[in-house]
Length: 65
Image (cartoon, rainbow, N blue to C red; front, side):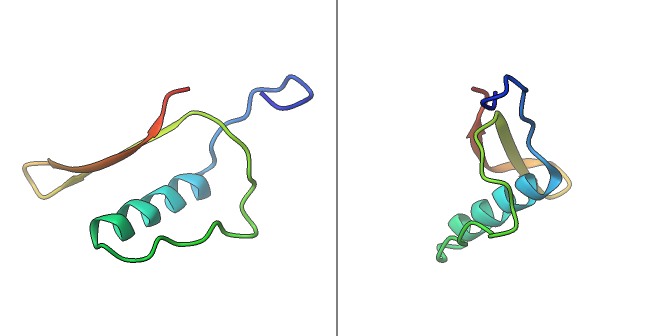
């Protein structure tokens, strides 16, 4: 929640950034910096990345809290 008591939710851009971080980690590359135009707040976000037709788990990142 923010300081006005409103529940904050992750936006599509937050999810896209998490995938960028996950892909960089899997490729052993430097993780991208936080985009300046992306709101910076804490909220629950968990992303799972599957690969291929058989949907093999490739990675996951995040928190439910």
